[in-house]
Image (cartoon, rainbow, N blue to C red; front, side, top):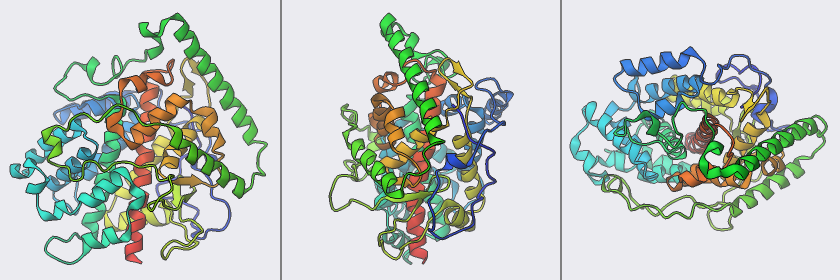
Amino acid sequence: MDTPRQALSPGAGSGGTGSGGPRRCPFRRRGASSGIPREGGDSSLHRLLKAFVSAGRVDHVAMVMGLHPQYLSSFWKTQCLLLHMDGPLPYHRRHYIAIMAAARHRCSYLVGLHMGEFLQVGGNPAWLRGLHCAPQKLRNLNEINKLLAHRPWLVTKEHIEALLKPGEDSWSLAELVQALVLLTHYHSLASFVFGCGIKPEEEQDVGNSCWAPSPHSDSSPASDDSMGGSGGTDAMQEVEMLMERMKLLQENQLEEEGVTQEEMATRFELEKTESLLVPSSDILDPSLQSHIRCFLEDPEFGYKDFTRRGEHAPPTFRAQDRGIPVFPTKPLASFVHQDYTWEDHGYSLMNRLYPDVGQLLDEKFQVVYNLTYNTIATHCGVDTSVLRRAIWNYVHCVFGIRYDDYDYGEVNQLLERNLKIYIKTVACYPEKTTKQIYTQFWRHFKHSEKVHVNLLLLEARMQAALLYALRAVTCYMT
């Protein structure tokens, strides 16, 4: 799918910290990019997979992400830094935190993977009997782990303060920031695993590593016998209708510059309310496996639509620049009329407390923002920026983040109901994702394009949760 302009250098921003003037959506300030490799046709994929082989293994996540080599490169660098490079936390504790995060979504793939990694780096086998056998310091992460996994808008400075409170089991600020990144990373990666139907490595048949016939197949689900003749025709008509809507929206954007902020806010609130009408999967949670249950406290706690009226309904964030939330103009704690941006606050906070990770996260966000092949299904030379923007903004919408300059009417025009159901399920309760809802949306699109959607979901979800967490850290520090 298509894209923006030359990417900004990591951490670049406008330099302003005030809240004057409308805040722009990321895709509005970028144009054509010429540096994206063609899908499946770049030697960088071969080089990356060769590097994984030299490291001793190629896991199924890497194989599926390998459909998009540039993203895989950025993801791999970030994950390598988080798990294997210098940092405040010991290596075995990093893997244990990954286990705790993955267990919140019942992701046996990631739990099993990091149980093995935990032992390889010298972790105490007794800890794997369950969270009750881990040190109290790690157990103290349980509350913020479940909030970041399911309702990140509830994270406050009090949660940060409790973890940093002096004592035998207290965290340092640097340790906690690394833990927060690990938690949000693995919550989001669990969404990717379930969203693509990735299976454990024991199933070594490459063709069975995910729901697609092969992770490197460009065949479309619409070609399956289950579609039938009329099903294939209907799927192609859906593609043509989507292409026409995208074209009309791009033409209208050149003409609609006079929409007021009030109208934009009203359209967002309408979309946020309509997201309540998108049901979760009605598939019940499978019985918890013992190796996952033992790492869970309060297993019934899950995502809850914050747009329903209630005591935990949070204020909506306004967004600035490249998809970063901005504090609302209504009073909220000590932050009134103040911005909280990745460029001016999150990025510098990360690099001050956890060097290098801020730059790699910024790079990863930019790569997925800009990733494009200028294709849709069988069509080439297509500008898909409006479609990618709609997917990204819809994920942020269900987590309470709003873009000042974005018309949320585009979401309803571009995202069919089946796609909305899929996005909300994968982003909010990924453990309920089924192959049925995977195959029901975009029936004539390539599997690699559906993986592309999942990459947008992964990063949009991580960015949303991470900004809530960093906001709480900043509140604590000020």
